[in-house]
Image (cartoon, rainbow, N blue to C red; front, top):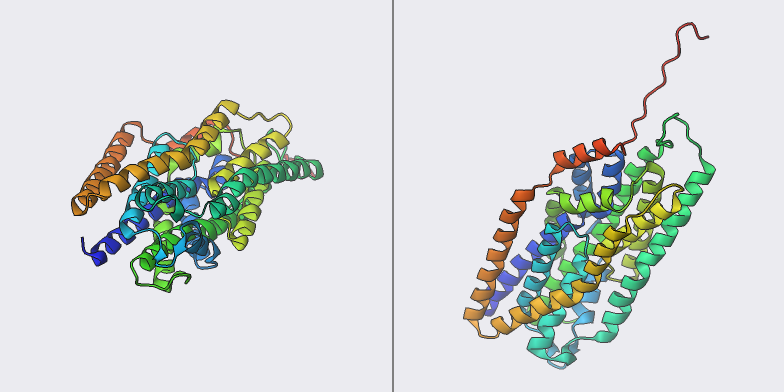
Length: 390
């Protein structure tokens, strides 16, 4: 297949992955404010989409980690071809959609890394992957970031409840934090754009370098940044309601004060990691923060069975995406016919998973009804003075 055509296919597939990343990870910023009623579902995803778009333009350190770190550059340039990147993206997209279908907030980042690593190992050998970078900037952040975010959220929740009191006379109390959640969830969305959108930028840049259209070691071009920013923003606006349901109502009953604590902890962890070039999973950070905030509120309980399902998804994501990416790479090695087979199978899976999801539809209306029915929404009303009161 002509190199220009395969590069165009890879770019298109990368942008579709960016789209899936957007709706897969909307929950990271907006699950908790939706759960407490701080933001209506459609308003929340629209706000997240705009801030993801803005955040994508603020940094490119993570993109450089992917384009010039994970895959080695040898004497002849990067040791991976556009065909292998194509196969790796198929592995990432298949796993992303599968976990979305089951409502599991797994890591889109690790799905991407797994797909690329699996394809590279099959097509270019073990020497093509810099496992030192994988360990230092992917695996170690995956271990420590959720724990750090969870611990921070736990402490922040304790502080929030110790220095404030219920002011509205309602069982949920501390509803004023609902307004703070608008700011804190917006900060998470902005931080998400600075980290996750860059991963696709890195993949496209890696493709251009592998195809000889860009110098090795250089960062993403502006058109790449802009295209990825808009792709993840559009994906974010489309919702991802299944995962929002799991993260917002499935782990713990979120109240405004703990939601605010969880969101600020998530944002701080993501922004710090983006500055250092760590391609961490924002999903793992957000999940850790929600669990930490649940542990920090007295009387709250964490649904550990759901947390266990999420943890299993975390562990399986990278190797599962790697296996799918490796299989796709084996098929792609046939040549043009292999690329076509990969594309047909990929499209068939995508269509199949969306058709199957219609049978058990989760949308903004059903999610809002569920949250209202659970009594988690804090509605602050002004107390009218009694008649005759001075």
